[in-house]
Image (cartoon, rainbow, N blue to C red; front, side, top):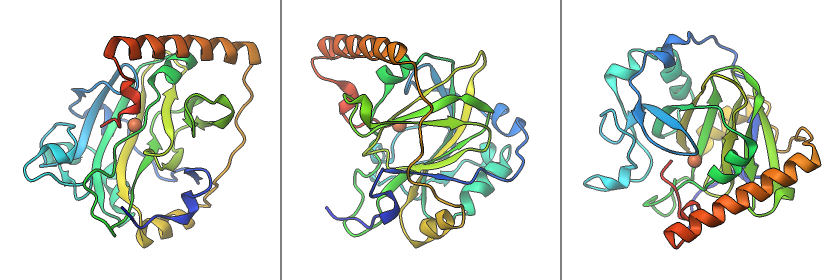
Length: 254
Ligand SMILES: [Fe+2]
């Protein structure tokens, strides 16, 4: 299959942008209807756009007819509560698939490594159309929490840790990059996540926001990192033994 991809993602699979420069009232994410949807830890999701405009999180290929992760239908009751967030997604002028707020409870670095997974964004994406990538916009101010990206989940040297202060914005090829969040706080983390189709509109929007394709990760204490790595490997191995396969290697719908 060949899809139109954005060359800016070729090297590292992610791009960090200028922070969002608007103001979002927390009621835009706190007043939404959330559904239990386990992904990358103890999570709930509030969908803003879904396959048919219902408050649910299923991937679009589950519906009849099955569709790629594009042309999500805005959910009126949710969008009415989050006009700024909807506007932020629409301003890009690219095709939008799943769009939702994630609520993540605090966790550990080992939890994040355990939860890391690949998304399934391009199932049924027609040949010749734009590759679907993920946009993340951090809502709560969590500068000591990190998006953990790895090219190879089993190789810590491929890891990038991206700090998540309020307004942090990044685009990730989340079908290529293993990802999860290490959330250090005593309250949940909220983030706006949506699928975008790669193409000139998204590329233009990126280039207007000082895109950076490689950032220096904050240093971790080597012993702490080794211990977390070992714990995560042990737990991942136990999960693989339990299921008979590694579920995080089967593309996730999250
Ligand atoms: Fe994901």
